[in-house]
Length: 186
Image (cartoon, rainbow, N blue to C red; front, side, top):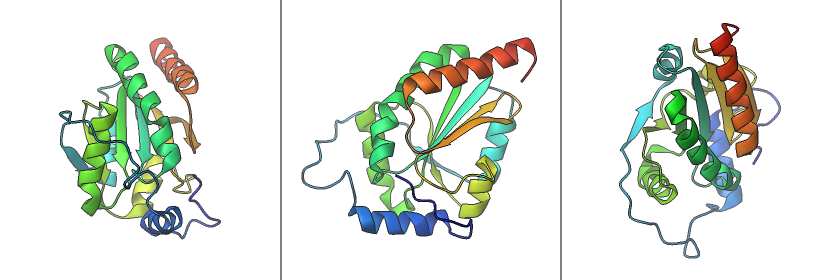
């Protein structure tokens, strides 16, 4: 779902509000499948400053950041691939950071969706000014959801995509970043 509009003056929150209105709360409602009861770590708030620190802390050879929302159908469709990616690359130390762009009052829906998807690792809810958060990931990012970003061990952006991606693409990108780290070219 492309939420970005020409010009960068639009705020992610404003875009989210428009998309919710246009979508009518895609993915929710009476026809939604029942939520499975699973234990999920609590969703933590994440500011742009905290995200910068996470990306630059050097504790992961690669970090995959995905910004998503419960109402975003393409986000929901690609989610199983992100969970699978985390499982496959966890032994290599790769960190997958899932950041919900939902409004704070939808935290319960975020946690229910994460439980349904079987997420058992730390996840986040975006906090703070939208443009600061967007620019922390990439000054070229319009704020479109989903947005996926792959950073190397130093926190340098190596790859990004606006819109839905897939597991084979993510595997290839992560393997390339890992190979670059191993050879000292990152």
